Amino acid sequence: MRRSKAEATETVRTLLEVARAHFTEHGYANAALESIVQEANVTRGAVYHHFRSKKELFRVVLENAQREVADRVEREASTSDDLWQQLRLGCRAFVMAAVEERNRRILLIDGPAILGWETWREMDRAHSMRLLREQLGTMRDHGFFPAIPLEVLTHFISGGLNETALWLANQALQPNVADETMKALDALLEGFKHFR
Image (cartoon, rainbow, N blue to C red):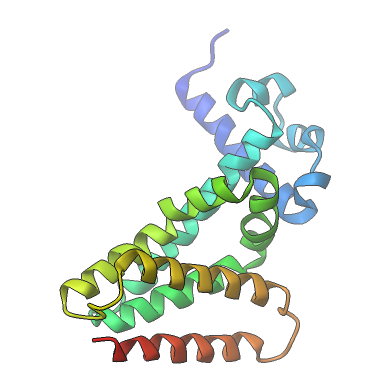
C-alpha cells in the first residue's frame, strides 16, 4: 500500500526529531541507526527511503539546526530598530544558541568533523553568515565602516563568533563565563564604531 504524502512527511519529521535527540545525547559516532529506527517506530527501509545513509540523516539534522539558529538570530536582532543594536543582538543570539545543549555537539563538534569543514562552512554561509552579511551590508549603506571590504568584515566577525562559540561550549561549567564572553563581544563590536 502506498503511503500518503502527509504520512511520508510525518515519518521524516519523526526520524529527524529522534535522530537529533540521539546525535545530541550520544554524538554521531555513538548514535546507533538501529536505535533511531526503533524509537521512531519505523523500518530501516523507511530510513533509507528518505535518507541515503546515517551521514545523510545527520546532514539534514545539522542543516535544520543551522536554520533554527539563524531564525533565532533574525528574531533577536529584529527586536531593535537601531542598526548597531541589531548587530549586537544577532551576534549574541548566535553564540548563545550555538552553545545550547540541543545544538552544541551537532553544530560545533560533529558537524565539521563528520561532514568536513567545507560543507559545514557552506551551511553556515547559507544561514547565520548570510544574515550577518546582510546586516553589515545594511550598515554599510548607512555609512558605517566604509574602509573595510564587506566580505572581509563578514568573515572576520563570523570566524570570531564561531571560535567564541567553540570556546564557550568547552567552558560551560565555569561560573560567569557566558557573561564575560558577552562583555568581550560587546567591546569588540563597539570598537568597529570607530571605522566610519
